[in-house]
Length: 510
Image (spheres, helix red, strand yellow):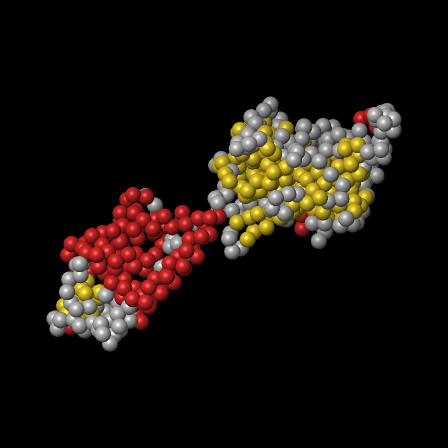
């Protein structure tokens, strides 16, 4: 997998992004300072693979990182320097995000803290910090005092360490490894790094010393090979950051008009304009994922919105609030609960089912047991009533009625199905208590009777329909009726009832 490294010479860049954020092809992270329920700094994660504009549970941080970098499912954070006798130590931490396929949720690993990496011990100023497949890469430049040859002493009298020239360092395994820089690279204060190219291993360095006004110098590096240089016929005023979009590299710059931001794709010999945006009022950042750029805006402390930027037209998508991902309890427990209820129902049937030797079905000669197909038609008609009521109340698409709890990861997705089943069970129970038959049974000429052919009392109907509701929620339980010689479902077996039709009607069907 090739490495494409770029050094750009342009005009001075604007200040670093107000909202700390980093992204990879499938994941993005951002840091906010929350006030509720308590003041704290929180790292949040979002992925387009989530089923909506959500972020996974925030990870608390002790302080605000100086910079962040990401690759794949891993994030690195680097903090401001702490001075020692011989150097400046920058603490580096990492965290990974993983998806539990059984639960369908994302979580950080470790889930409650950051994992410490080897500190970056070097004097100088951190210009930029990016992630690659081999690890994070940091660009350091000399401070203004070092450039002026000014040295000072700390409180202990030790001479302050100074960086004489720019350094490009990559965390490879446990060590920071020095990477070669182009010989003409001076690493001024506006230097930047970026990642692009096949495999996403591209480094971008920004040098505000153009050979000609209105031009930028680009240095490309393929893998471990030598640097190559090209020029693009455009200056890079107020370059804020770079963002990787698949294999492409996007630049975010101060716009030509006041109060605007320009975004363009970097090519070896040109900058292709993509979008001109109005500068957001609050803290914001532009990050890239595989399918395009995302604009993050913080409207209030801890409240961040996300908008997609079309990768071809540059048009802004609809603003969406990033909210905390739904607690997994409702999403995870309904399936095992349904299975437990189903097993319990089967146990009840086995314990209380009629004994064929002592409680055989003895129907009058003018009625016969309904066939499975006839009962299915009756249930379908009853469900149509529940479906119509649900569509009127919820104003939902017809396809929502098919989202059974057994097929969905989130119980809220089955709201339409649950309402339909509930309405069906309600009107069926009332009709059977009043007349012994539902609308569907009346249509096919069927009714509910006891195993002796008598009309069942109300308490028996209520008992029967309780188990019928369970079968509607878990349709696979209807197979129990097919295994019963009298086509008795769960409710019929427990309540000792049977669904019958007049004998002459059954004979006509045959």
